Length: 382
Image (cartoon, rainbow, N blue to C red):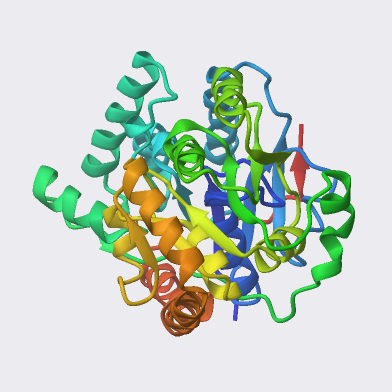
């Protein structure tokens, strides 16, 4: 039986660097034997062989801040419209939805919303206007629409009266944590075990690291906080964090590449603190929770839709005083925190394994009308 040929459009990094590309990577690893996938991505020496059987169409990253991604999407869309080898296209990310009307002229399209980027204060007024436009294009398109967050689907139904199917993110929980794989990283930054951990793909304001540091200052925390994530996104914000951290033992270790290393970093921490002010459905939350490290999280709706208060210790989002109180409680009640962590781990492994999620995407793929394919082209790069 011929496999259905599916193009993945809207991600940039393959191998993944986290976020949406991590979601897609989990999906492909589970379904690559059932479908013939091609990923459109930035050029990377490991991309073509990253997942056996998954082909790539690669373009060089254009180093123009903000606009470079749009030009990359134009290249991807142009290639998609020129070739005739796909049965359908799966578009990811709202910022790529600008191209939905074009793609729908030729293909059956599934479009997945991962977040509402105009709520991110890091973007300019012009960029946020573009994201609002793409949201309207997403909701008015002929594509089959999905979203990874229940609060998002509720918002779309209320604002646009458009039904969007909720399909949660799913993860592959680590089978074994190789704790030693971060020995060199911790030694480089002179970090001993029993540290607090903040980790994000990008260290930007909406991830809430400033709230955490202010709370630690308030309680005069004497231990070590490790901050892991890309510090180059907003240099002014990184400078602000370093000033806030003056007098505390805060180690800024940068972006941690590789899932095994990040998992080991989480596993060896005392507590994982997740003060994010805005999420879709965080892969970091799911992956950290699956490891079994106790967590302290902001009470944003997107987090509470995943884990209940009996599974994780919540604090009021953006509230320094409440986070300070919750940190003190956690330090004084380690057994209770460990029990919460056990419940978190059990809940995530019961409800958010990729093996439990992919069937919903597979059902959509199977029911979609297909275009007439021609002979396949080889992996392509420019």
